[in-house]
Image: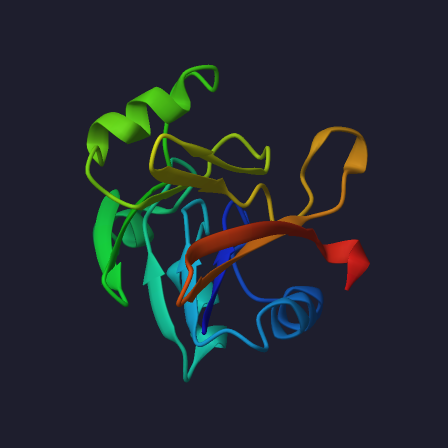
Length: 164
């Protein structure tokens, strides 16, 4: 079984102690990390040393990060094709737009809306881990996702940082 940690919308310029603590607790059993954009500064990915890391830029990333990371990315893990994009524009039809980017993948991971999502449409698993930093309405706790790949295929779940 493979565990893949997914986060998005961290909106920080450097990894502080709280971020480090939350990441170590949330992703300790993950060998692969996917960041779906709005990490703001590329340096925050350095805390995932020893892990395979995939990331895309988002609309709130600084210039260096936007130049260093793609806006969208396809990866293959254990034979499953995964499309990753931060997303942009209207939140109401964001899944339609990311599906147009990746119409033939097994899983689409996106961010931008700060609203966690984990559901299947047709044969495609959609995952939005929400905002890891808890920038949600009314001070909602941060969220993230864990994607598992095993002999039965893909499965995922949304987790809340406060439940660690």
